[in-house]
Image (cartoon, rainbow, N blue to C red; front, side, top):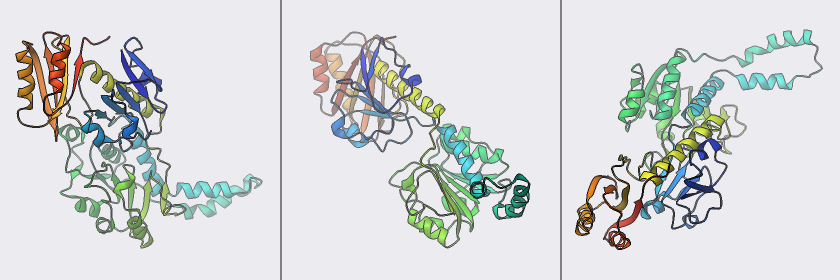
Length: 394
């Protein structure tokens, strides 16, 4: 029986993936094997020694102490792409709101006296509507910075709206490249993308290299009257630099899902309360993906969509499997296999993958190891943890 502790309200469609015959799922489960959460801020002290995996039903993991987890051999999962469509649709709304003064027009209607006779309202609207005129998206150029799960959808959205679409992503994966329509023009660098785009939509993660990426220097490459949309992460944009660009009239609009006091009550800033993934469908998709990842890991040791461990999947070739995490150092796997060989345990199949300083091994063996053998493995230099996986519960 696997134990999973939950934080936040997790969609029942996700929790239902963890069958009650095999999983104990609760917000107060003691000594959990895994943690499933959304936005709850988790500290190192909140993570019991029994935990081997943490899954966030969402893309960002800034609420999880990832470095601490890596040191302890705890796999951290996220759910990239599960909320992609929800974010795409909100970006579409953001571009439309930035191109047409829909908000101003609606506010004007709300300001009217409800006692105004209908025969007077029509002429008033006709006389006032010019102040809310805007421009069409068709024919404009959309620049997409970051062409992953969400960025590729945004690029396709722009094409569907009749826009010219340019994109840049120095770290694009093969899978993402296949998803990208061939009519999206690839730019050589960010500056080329910025200088060509009427609308720039950001879809990159927060890394040391991307923190404050949109700053006074990079904004200087933007076309005059361009619109910047940030539905990625607040930290990649220097808000002060954006305010300065708006004040100078260099930027026409800033649309973001991450409000800042410097931007409140500005007519040239469209602010949303971090609702990019706030749809019932996105929450369900994230919960389902996170639960499936926990199940695959606890049952088989397989890893998909981890932010700190390598992706690895090995089909079961025996009823007994070892999942071993060790420091990524020369000879570590040989030492593990020597211990198994000395104990006359036959290796049926194995797969070894590494990521930066971490190595992870799935080893199918022909017999259940003794407690003494498991202890020998755990005491090997560089070994962080050893999990024994029996036949999966179904």
